[in-house]
Structure formats: C-alpha cells, structure tokens
Amino acid sequence: MTHRNQSGLSRCIAVLALLTCFALLSPGASAADAITIFMIGDSTMADKPMIPENPERGWGQLLTLYFTPNVTVDNHATNGRSSKSFRSEGRWDVVLQQIRPGDFVIIQFGHNDEKADEARHTEPFGSYTENLRRYAKEASERGAIPILATPVVRRVFDDEGVLQPTHGDYPDAVRKLAQAIDVPLLDMTLRSRDLIERLGKERSEGLFIWTVPGEYSRFPKGNSDNTHFNALGATRMCDLVIAEIQAKVPELAVHLKTGR
Image (cartoon, rainbow, N blue to C red; front, side):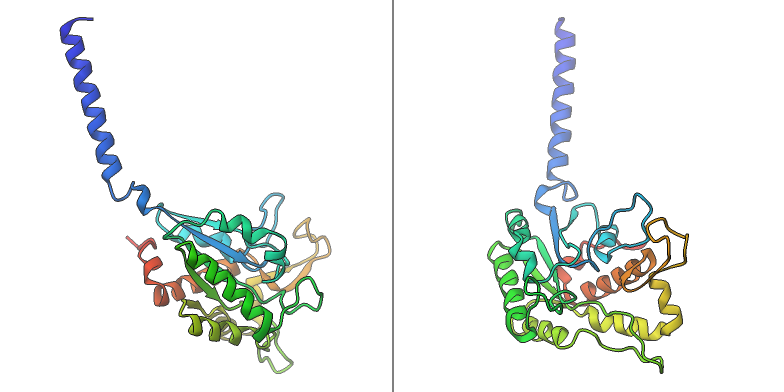
C-alpha cells in the first residue's frame, strides 16, 4: 500500500472515529437517556394478539406510540390477573430482574381482585393495598418510579341510563395508598367514567367489543363485552392515561412526542 493510500485510510478511520464519538455524545443517542416503562396489570391494559383478526386491544398496547424513541414500553399486563396472582405466578419476579434506575412502573389492578376465587381475591383496604404497596416499594428500591393507576370502569348502565360503579372500594384504596406513600396516581376510574358518561349508553358501546354475528371469526355468534376495549376504546383510554401523565408525572411527560 502506498503512503498516499495509507494516509487516506488513516483520515477515513479518524473521521469515522470522530463521527462515532459525536453519536455517542449526542443526547438523542445516549444510553443514559434510554428508559423503560414497565406495565403490570390485567386484561384492560394487556397486549392482545392481532392475527388472526381480533377486535380486542388493551390500552397499554398503544402506549408506545405516544413516546419518543428513547422510551421502551415493556407491557407485562396479563388477562385475568389480580395483584395477588400476578406475583404468585412469578410474573413480578420477571419484571423486577429487569428494572433499572430511571425506569417507570405503571401498576393497575382491580378487575380481578374483585373475583371470589382464592387465587385472585383480595380485600380493598387489606391485601390489595398491601400488594400494591409492596410492588411500589420494590420498584422504588431498584431506582424506578412507581405509578399507581385505578382500574378503568366497566360500561354498565341502569335502566335510566346512569353509569353504575362496579369496582367497589378498590379505586379509593388505590387513591389513599398513592397519597400515603407519595407516588403518582393515574385516576383512570375517574377519567374513564367521565368519558363514558359523556358519551352515554349508546355511543359508548363503540369503545367496547360489541360485534354482530359473522363480523369476526373469533366471535361467530357476535359478542357483547362491556369490560374490554376495541382499538378505538383502547386508544381513547390511552389518551386519558397520557392526560394523567402530563398532569401528574412530569419526569415521564418530558418524553412524550409533541405535535409539529
């Protein structure tokens, strides 16, 4: 190789090294800026399969769309789990091993804590509160910011068209715990109730999995579900989550995409 070629190669290597340094020092590319939002909860939050065709979505499935590329959403919410069974099945251990300082953990249970079976049932101001407290404490010990969320409401209207509460004392238990341990609260019970009441009995049906016979192979006889969301409903719930984050979790809100 000639001296000229050696010199040219050396310059190329130097330029590449300099560009690499700039990339490493760039705030947008810094590993220090990378954060993960871990999510633990039930089916209303969980990721749902899309193939074969499936109308159901959990609101957590949409969350990644709202954040800048340095944010990873790692959704561990699972159908049918309560604050009790999520831990007893070892699902929390999987999350706990991955949490790093600066991460966030969104915790939303309640729908299945209400169930009567021993594997899932908890008492609002007893084991439910203690389970949530323990999740928050262990996340904090690993340097993450825990975020408590009240459960989204079910679409249950009475004959007069009044939306009925179905979660008993569970939402209040979350609110009181969040205040007691000073962690952010996403009041999804309040937010989702206001939205569904505003839409009313007929229009709010469009947020849930109501299908006619033959519309989806998954529901050959049709479906009438007032708990789980379709794509529109999950998106609207996620909109409400983002509004709560903007109001109450500024450390996370700074990572939201902004309009152009």
